[in-house]
Length: 72
Image (cartoon, rainbow, N blue to C red; front, side, top):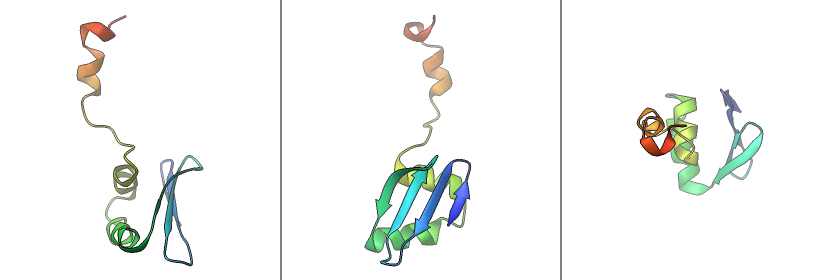
């Protein structure tokens, strides 16, 4: 099991991988995708799990905050 700033993953006996975010399931990978994930997760677990679940920042938050529509 890997834990990194809110993300975690569990390898199951059937070869699938369950990725969770703050204790809630965020995705399940099976077969070839699970093997790809496990090969990649050692590099930077936080970034890899966020990318595989689609839960990551895209780098435009500051720009969006400064947009006239979002000024309060």
